[in-house]
Length: 340
Image 1 (cartoon, rainbow, N blue to C red):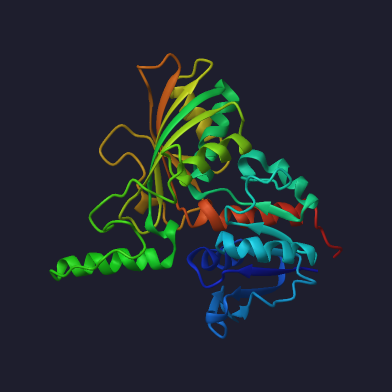
Image 2: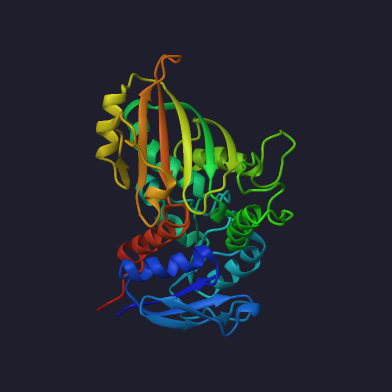
């Protein structure tokens, strides 16, 4: 006997990947329902070899749904996630709305999978920010070995993290430049084609952006509240795949060679670190893959126990959709098991 699954935001980039990954990983679903806004009613989305007609999220009855994967805005999640949870569905929410709620576990299965057990408090589990997810997958095994004190990270985040309209804007601007035309930015504050923008999400009074704040706050909740994180988050003209340049300071000694060995044995991590031309992973290399790739592992000679790392992952997959499906797999394997 399988499960009834709903995917909210099914017409967006992350919702599309959720459907793909549910099929690829043969999630035990007897029924999958695609939900979106009223504007998408009647549209069709692919689920493996099947085609699903999109239904209206606002008035969908979640009674009987076992797991609901949400890939909507925070504003929509604020209203619809509690409604789905109250109807009995366990909601895995990709928005930022519930991440810092003390009664909602914030989960990356390779890092703190045991937190899934706390889902019953509100019937909600939060998915972390895409840039946080790949960072903590790489940091967890190193933290277990040498205890991280501080992380300084600069991100190079693809436009898909801002949604389909942002991807379209990069494509349209690039094409326009080659045609000697100019298109005004709509989804970004400045031109994104052939440019980088050191600004993701709203600015806070501290001077950091909300995206930068999320990376620090979420890392503390997922990994260890004592870790200090300083982030600079940058949007780059790449369609899919987030990259991060990390400088990590540890309490205890750790060498680059030890880090390579530890990371090669870590779940969800692939090490590609050859000190030659092309001996590293780029965003283009990781598209469509499940793993978090780590390259350029080297000792930081300016810190007593420091390492520098280059971390790359498909943000639509591990940064969002895959992580949600992995949480759902843990739920059905350990907590929502149905009789055969």
